[in-house]
Length: 579
Image (cartoon, rainbow, N blue to C red; front, side, top):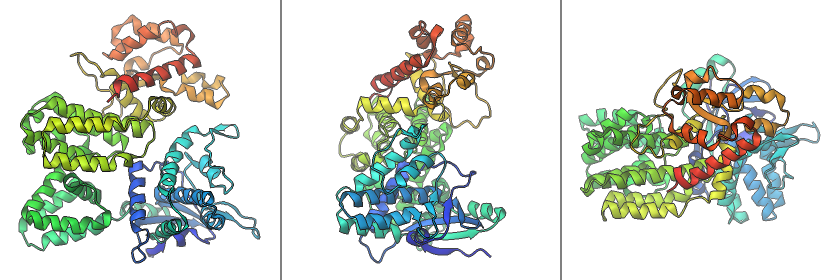
């Protein structure tokens, strides 16, 4: 029989004679900045509250192997918690609390003199394993290396370093008392642990559990409050609100509040929503919540028809009846979903409300503002690796301004765009990270980048969609082609040389039909393209590419790849994603 058991994080990590591992079938570690920020906000809020422990959802462990607990559900959280512990250890060392650092190390790694057992408590996902093991060492000097031995770990560092740096920055002002209080908040946080011993149980239980289990708490409280009015129509509306939230009800409720009233602590959300319901009147409250849920579904959907339907529902027909307009709006939502950015949702909702109520219907200002939001998150978060909380208060304050409409739409958008522009990452930071991170490993990101480059300045010409995530297709009309063929990799031994094959400077988006019959030699490939316009598939950027690099095709090598990667990055910062 499977018996769920309540355990604290301390109880899971402290003094156990077993280790945790991430099984091969699990996805790579990829917790986003939004999830990290939410966890840190919750921990800081719980810090110092002795009577209040934070619930972190369900952990499912496959215990079929002795002393090796495979993490079926919870690896993203458990890995992130371990990185937080490493940051806590490093801060303890910095403020000369060596004993404290030693106790934290006991939660990160096992070091037994009598048994000789050594190693980390958790064997993390392979995509960050080397760097995680490196920084887990108590003697780590705080510097992230580019190589460990002869192996390049730059991509691993790019995954872990932003998380570590964000946590360390949040702890920067902590003295021993603060550090103790925060550590208690983390270690006394609890989860529901489910231990299973066979594959059938593993996956059946996994399918029935959610990531953190927090939605149910606030959702049930709000549901009970709404249903206490005994209005028959509310049940149907509530069910639709739940469906529109798509398993992220708590986040949607929080964004509903932020759009109207700004930032709020999680612990205050239910009480505030309840008070707001009384203030508005319960019927208006439910209708407003339903309307926001329809927007939330449209923003999450990546489907232009759902976006169009929402615009019609809220009577913004000047946008819903213009195919170019509602497609533009959907492309912003598609980009934000690719970026794993949701914190802009309440702001964008309020922007639409202000646009509708202003009466001027200044679509140019609307789309400029949506473009600014998208470009900011691409430049600062996706490429430069900055944590999203640098705009949290700025977004919350502007959400209220747009929602309340105390100034006209043009004035509000100008002030917002100017304010966000001041937060833009520096060009050097963007360029170096762009070259490093935009690679063949992330095909959706490559498609997005080429889409924006190709359609940056259409001059009235036809748009060609390269990034189209709403289409569930096994085959697409456009493929990614390596100019210097991947088949030549076997001729090179150095890992840094092999990585250059997959840099954006060596990639093209071309017609799938052309892709299948191209020769390996770069110069010969270009001759094929130039021989017949059909191979260009109406992709404007290819014409610029042929013109700019015509003298490099005969000797296409790593230096040319580096040059083109840098050129794309610099043009991207100065032109395509400029704001």
